[in-house]
Image (tube, rainbow, N blue to C red):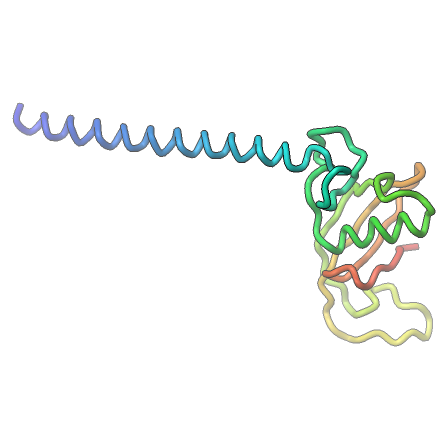
Length: 145
């Protein structure tokens, strides 16, 4: 009986601590998700670039995007003569391109021979899909043909 009392007390303490930690994690995660939804649910009204500013509230397309993705949205919109909100990012994959021309060198074009990190993006606009390649900061953008 004397050994089980300290073990029972220890078990109560451990279970109580575990329950408190679990409650804190659930509460903080729920609170964080609520604040993120409030921050990003109106993509057009804030200055955080998203994959589709005209997407419905709560859409995955209202999440913030990397600088290179924003650059492609802007480039595509300017090229097509539409607003950025009408350009929807369908996919954005991190890639390593074989050269500074992002693997899309024109005939006779000289490209730096260095592995270039960046993105491959598929965007939709005007009912068509376009695939772009970019370096990591979006300062080089090329359309796949």
